[in-house]
Image (cartoon, rainbow, N blue to C red; front, side):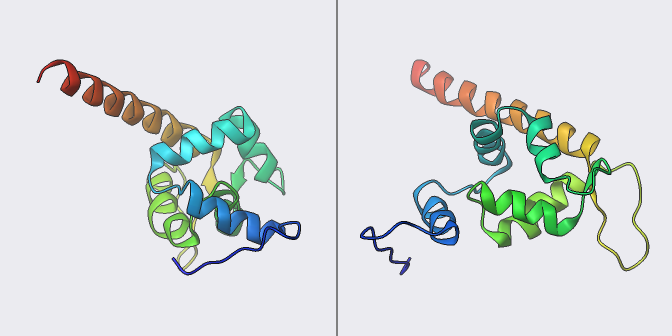
Amino acid sequence: SGARFSLSRELSRGDFIKLFQIVEPVNSLVDFRVSLLRTYGTVAAAFECHDRRCTGALQPADFVRLCVSLGCSSHHAQQLFYQQICEQNTQQPEPDQLPPVSFSAFALSMRHAECLGVMQWLRRHASRHWR
C-alpha cells in the first residue's frame, strides 16, 4: 500500500496505528468486535475508556478515535461502523448534527457482531464437513 516504516527507531503512536491497520485491518463489524475485546477485554471497558465526558455516549470524534485505535481506517469508522451503530440509537440527534453513539446502541451492535461471527464460524465449519 506504499506505507513504509523504519524499525531502526521506536514507532510513534501514529506509525503503530498505521502498521496495525496494514497487518490486521478491521474491515467489518465482526473484526471490530474481535479487536475491541482483544484490546479492552469488554465492550463496557472500551466504551468507558472513550466516553471522555462521562455522558454515556460517545461523540462522533471520540468514536472515530476508538475505531482508529483498533486498526480501523477512519473511512470505515465514519462510513460503515458509525452508521451501523447509530441505527441502534434510541435518541434522535438535533437537525444538522451527527448523533452521539449511545452505550445501548454500541452494546447492541457488538452483540449483533458476535452473532455474525458465530454465523461465519458455522458456515466455515459446515462447508468443510458437507463437501
